Every structure is written in structure tokens, then in C-alpha cells.
Length: 303
Image (cartoon, rainbow, N blue to C red; front, side, top):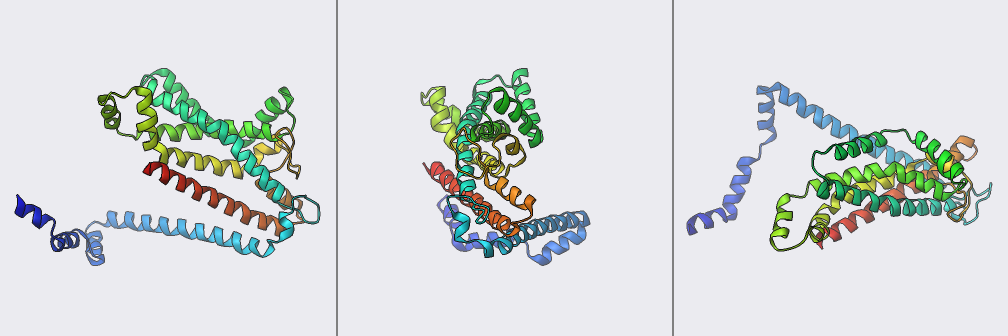
């Protein structure tokens, strides 16, 4: 037994085994020659990856080249005028809209996912109905959400065009996304974790919050990041609910987000350069939020 362990732990033996398990380019080409179908699939996979990365870098590069030259101090003035077309009020409104929407949608979506995975009877009609409803809501166009928000939050509740009406509309839009991704993340946690916790005497609630949820954090945060991207980029629904006033209001006041700001500038056709600069700010805003979310996920996963 000692001889086998020493051989298995020998670095030279490990290197030899890795070389045997690694195919050279020539070996791969010979394998594809013997199996043309596998070669075609490998080529299509490589082509798809190259096209995807090329489009990504082209899009980012185009936005940066078009927008960076027009970034200046006047774009970050606190007060919007027709001369400076400042984006700072829209940036602040975007941050407020994102925080308010996630403050409502994230807890509701995560706790709904916990109920579906941990408490609801598996395979029941009620669970199937909730999942079908969530998938249906995910496929509804955003303009329909905007119409509903205008009729219910703006008109029926008498909130008027306001950030709160826009945030509540966005909550309905991103709630199915957060719930479904959180549900899949919780289902991916092995049942052995739960059984080990129960075996040590922990209750169900303690097991969920100390064992299951920390293990599912990366998947849950992935859904939250997707929700943030949809909130930041939404325009159609907010046109009917939050309005397009370029100011920093309270929650019951009208205000435009960065995406709406860029839409208004480009639709007017008078400030296309400033619209390109706004696109750069939106891109950087999304990258920063995604980076911070990734750091938080790593810290939580490490404990």
C-alpha cells in the first residue's frame, strides 16, 4: 500500500499521466478525420465562440470609441439644462430605481424559491402553477408591464408619474427571473448537505439559513445580476410610469433613468454625441455593479 501511494504521489508519474490524457492537435485532427461528424460539431462550437467574443469586443469597442471623446465635466453637473444635457440626475435616479426595486424583489423572490424547494410538496399542482405563471410573466413584453403600471400604479393608486411607480413595475418584471434562478440554485444544493445537518440535530429553518442558502449564493446572485441588467436597461415600461423629467426627485416625483436619458437624447437627434457618452456611463455602471456582486458572492461563499 505504501508503494502504491508513493507512486501515485510521484510528480513525474502525474506528469506522464497528464501527457497521456492530453491529445495533441495532430491526434485531434486524426480523430476528426475518422469521425467527420465530431469534426463538424467541434468546428461549429469554435466558430460560435469566436463570433460571440468578436461581437462582444466589437460592441464594447464601438461604444467606447464613440462615447469617450465626449465625456466632460458638464455632463456630470447636478442640474440638467438644455445646454449641458447632464446625465448625473439620471445616474442618481438609476441607482435609486435599482436599489428600491431589488429591495422589494430580491427578498420576495428568494423566499418564494425557498418555499417552493424546501416546503412545498414536490410535484403538486400548486407548485406547477406557480412555475408556469413565473415562466409566462418572464415572456411578457416590457411595454405590457408599462401599460399595467400606468393603469394601476399611476392612475388607480394615484401615484402619478413617479420613481415609486416605475420601481414597483420593475419589481413585477424581475420577480419571476429572481425566483426561478434562486429556485434552480437551491435545487442544485446536494441533499446530502441537508441530511448531514439534520443528522447533527439542526432544525429545518436553521439548515436552510446556515447550510443551504450559503451554498446557493452564487446562483442566486447570478439571477440578481441579470435583474440589475434588466432594470438599468429598461425604457419602455418606465416611459409610462416614471416619466422623463431630468431631475433628482423624491420617490413620488417623476425622473428619468440613464437608459431613458439616452433614449430621449437620441430620439431628439440634437445631442447624439452626449447620447454616446451616456452609453459609456451605462456600460461602466453595469460592469462595476457586476464586479461588486461577484466580489460579494466570493466572500459569502468563503464564509
